[in-house]
Length: 449
Image (tube, rainbow, N blue to C red):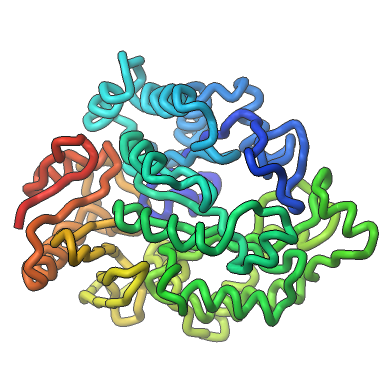
């Protein structure tokens, strides 16, 4: 199997690239203007795959699954990731057709409409257990959110980059901190899991300022995302930043500076947050300056483990990355409560004596509506086929059911009236077996308390 870590977190990600289209606001100074999807280069691996298929979403999904199966990866639990631009700025008809085509590819047959395609996916072989859409904080209206819910999306990644309005203007970002605050609150109140893209080392910053701004992401309750991607600023061919670099008006961080900053950041990421990725996979043909070592995270994590540094972020603690060690499989429930975007969040985990993470649940309590929103339920470890059990594997051992029961107890104690779960369409059948039903809008799985 090539890259076993690809499915070690319990799902199989399948990226679907959008055709090239400029952002409405213009172009950020760090973003390359090339004949490729926004912020990517023509030789980026995902772009090469997509362009060879003329950006046809159905063919992209079909071919990617076929390749993953050849590599030995399980493909029953698919997380679709729509990438390559601000999807919600494309024409609405295009969006509908694009998402439907993805479901059609998973189902192995074409449907009359998107609703039919989603319904079929509940019982097909390749089920969409999660759907991620990337957008900008200023392209996240109520209408946009309703559309994403209808698509079956469960996760939204926001291009935040840095929480500084002066830097936003300096880099021609086109949105404000207020947009980030509003988008974060609205998405959480709709039960989405939220990721931030963060870019230390950009024009107008320095290491001290970067660390302060990233601390703010977690200390200020208006933000507090569920996951982050850290993309230290790199000078890419075709970006406006390239000109500033050659004019000696901008100098990116060295590998040593980046490593030092990343270690400091990893030490402060709270246990409810997952660091999804560090550094972008920019082909060397297009990388002018910045960190060239794309697997720097691997070196950093090896050093942290060797020094027994206490790291709380989710990915570092996931059970899938500890299966080669002698593992204590006795788990206990850990509960973390924190305020975020005006409401209370309950982060439930099953961990062992070494704080290795086996499964988690995110519950948001909406006081006014008297509702509990389950924004994520995830059992870690290598992905298993739906319905299959293996003694040595972590999945399908009933941990998800126990986490749900604990969430229901919290909702009862809070005297809430209803629990709603944001669910990938391919997971609906699992929740039905636990007493949940699809709401009248066909969006959430719900249960009266």
